[in-house]
Image 1 (cartoon, one colour):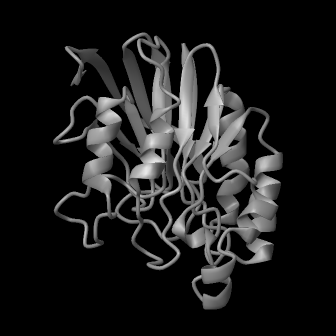
Image 2 (spheres, one colour):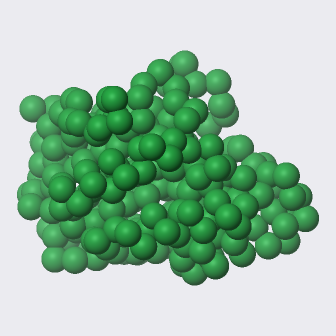
Amino acid sequence: MKRVLHLSDLHYGKDRADLEEPLLDTIHQLQPDLVAISGDFTQRARRRQFARARAFLDRLQVPWLAVPGNHDTPLDNLWVRLTKPWQRYRQAIHEELEPVYQDEGMVVVGINTVNRFAWQRGRLSDRRVTRACRAFLDDDPRARLVMLHHPLQHGPEVEKRLMRGADEALQALAGCGAQIVLSGHLHNTIIAPFRAWPELLFVQAGTCLSSRVRGETNMFNLLDLWGDQVRVQSWGAIDGVFDARETWSYRLDGGHWQRV
């Protein structure tokens, strides 16, 4: 079995500092094989906010993988956003914007969906999706995950526009053997197969530290992966302590995810 702890939307600069220590303690207790962070480390991409994010990462005692979010490029400094959008992220977090993690039980591929020209709405090109698909080998028995910041599906309650290229990306990812898609951005938890592509499981994380919550407390997801099955457990902060909230179990049946 492999265990992935999925964080998103830390938003240092608009964060609940009182939850940082409980979050780190919980991560340590759960002992994941990988911490996957789907972007928005900062609120305004300022150097001091990135410094706090880096200090958080340095306290993790397990491997981690991250992609940037739209808040990790400057909103209020147009020149920097257009000419050097990733400079501060690369200096503080990681040089690689689309990292890949592999071990004997899983492959996790990061995709950068941030669009410097449209700060809020993401963009996903065919080139980025093709690159991600190259990490998945034919008949690979390992769990195959993709992580990006912007979700590839919106519900009717979401007012934000869906990322450009989302529909095409779903079709391509389903066709190349991806199984699970991790994302964030909207600050709420969703665990379900994609409506049009049930070959892919949609795992969206809420915000683990931001003070800007949307209909739920601060949350993260814990994934246990084995064979053709996954168990996803949401964890939420109550009175300053993270506890398990709800559990979803899915199995691949005929190539489609079915809840069990």
